[in-house]
Length: 171
Image (tube, rainbow, N blue to C red):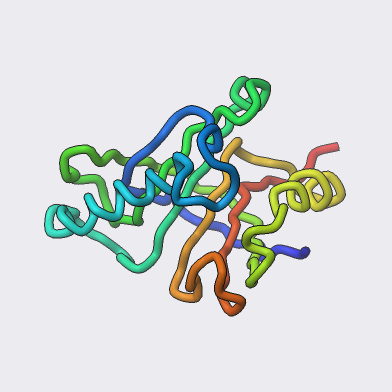
């Protein structure tokens, strides 16, 4: 599992968020867990409010950001999950939507294919690749990027990218 390294400017997203244990009601990739429910709410709101979103970049691309500061990591599965789309700039969003601005940073981007998407890629990235790489985590979040090659969780030709903000390891 080797990433591609990409430096990015700040990323501005408009979307919706959830805080808590997203897997309390249903594990993994399920429409019944809080992440699946969040995507359903956001998709409906996006369809209804698309004309109100200023500077929408690529409406077919979706971002799922998992923010896990150290205090939340200690609390188990507690995290903020934000789902949204990228916009050029901040302007009044549709009611119920919010902005998330991610800092300029280098990302290690991992392309996952088919069954890898629903596998334990988090463990492989954070417990195997990261400790042995020349990079360290720059910020406590992970992006799942759903681009045009994402065709669903069960499609063997589907592709999902996982972006991890990194910095050179010191010492």
